[in-house]
Image 1 (cartoon, rainbow, N blue to C red):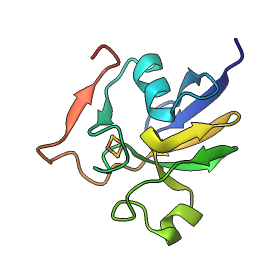
Image 2: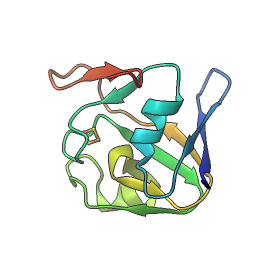
Image 3: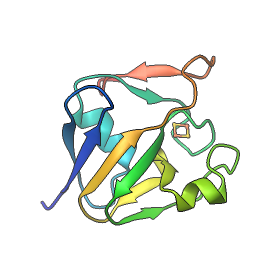
Image 4: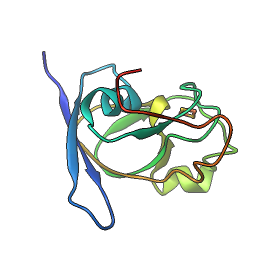
Length: 111
Ligand code: FES
């Protein structure tokens, strides 16, 4: 089955890679493919915890809360990973605004 390679850039650590199948969300791929926890909340575009910035590559963006990604931010590549469907290889970075909310939970891909 074809897949896309996602490269996650960190400011002060080596980058990591994971794979996403066509039609799979960026968040689902990160949960399954990364060994370190990723920020996860509602999984439906409402809480903003999975916010990322897409540095390059093609993707489809599904509807998401403008509270967490304004139109201006969307033009700069910000998106909610649970609402992004990659359409090719992507370079991304985490852009989670705050992990200190009751809705926050960290998931390492095992539930
Ligand atoms: S997990 Fe809540 S917006 Fe993506």
